[in-house]
Image 1 (cartoon, one colour):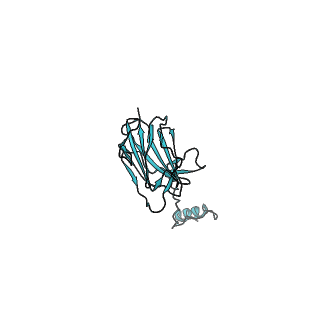
Image 2 (spheres, rainbow, N blue to C red; image 1 turned 180 degrees about the vertical axis):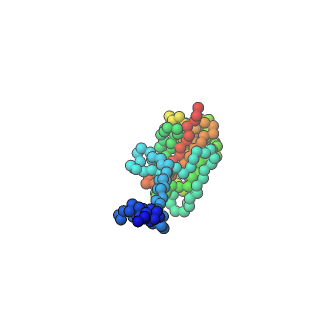
Image 3 (tube, rainbow, N blue to C red; image 1 turned 60 degrees about the vertical axis):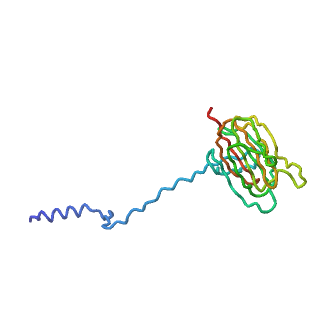
Length: 208
């Protein structure tokens, strides 16, 4: 008896299918996708001065500029006291650090240009080709008996960019300093730190 060719092909194909071989799902579920993790946010941190508390860091608040920077704070209540002024040379900049008592940094304005004494109005001359004026509001550089608080009133740091520092005012809640610099138009940036409260001024090093 001859077997029809079509039946022979079907039988051969059926014999080649093993029972433990799963048949393909006609409606497969989509393969789940896993999103790649986002990169960690990067923040530029700068280390506090060496004698600060371990681990004390703060985000820089500005890039270098030669334009005036001003931040106003409420001046009600007793004045804060300026406790110290320090400086140091770093790679690419000189740093000034003003330390206060209290739990915040006072209002401030840092601007290029000449400085005048708040009592007499006379110009304050500093060493160097350039000059910045730093004015602090709601702060004093003396105690309740009128004695100096410990912050310097005049210094000539031996730094590449910072040439001289002269306190030009300490009167009725305002303290001001004339900052003499090597360059005629110095660039600077500012940041604030807490515990203790500090205002940090970086003077960019000259390319010369």
